[in-house]
Image 1 (cartoon, rainbow, N blue to C red):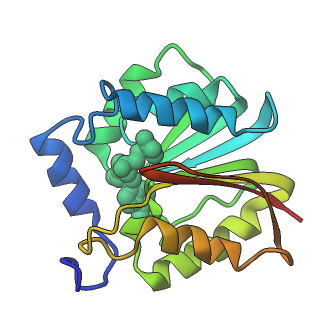
Image 2: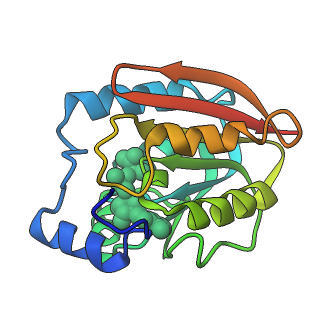
Length: 196
Ligand SMILES: C[S@@+](CC[C@H](N)C(=O)[O-])C[C@H]1O[C@@H](n2cnc3c(N)ncnc32)[C@H](O)[C@@H]1O
């Protein structure tokens, strides 16, 4: 039984979280996060992507790193408080577009050769995860990469676990996706897929 009654976590939930603490997961200072970001960037097979899409960019720590690997990067988040920090942090970079957006209720219309879903999928309920999956698949270009990274502890309080999110994408192998990298670390799982 989870605390959120099997519904996706709301914009208000995240806004309140960032109101109380501007960096609730210590993205800027945690050694664990820094190592995970290095593994995330190292997992990308291409040095440079044409067009990247980051879902749930938060305060922009990973965004700033991803922007070095993309000619253009769209970073979206539901939280205006978090995204305003990301905009400040990345103001020296001209290739990032920021938008406030709640996925999957909204989704960009353009296509991408890289989509990054890092530590976001377990906030969705099953229905939203399924909708997000089909939108991600639709907007990912052929031979484009989808990178998933999620914490794998089962707290019992979030709508989904990291494993459930990754396993749902594994179901799309081999007809729609090919899995080309998979790492299960002590606390997180990383999977890199290529669209067929
Ligand atoms: C744990 S943080 C992950 C930040 C970053 N991706 C990373 O790995 O460092 C999750 C972020 O996703 C955002 N988020 C949650 N649900 C979302 C949704 N439905 N659409 C877009 N962003 C969402 C939250 O506001 C929060 O900033």
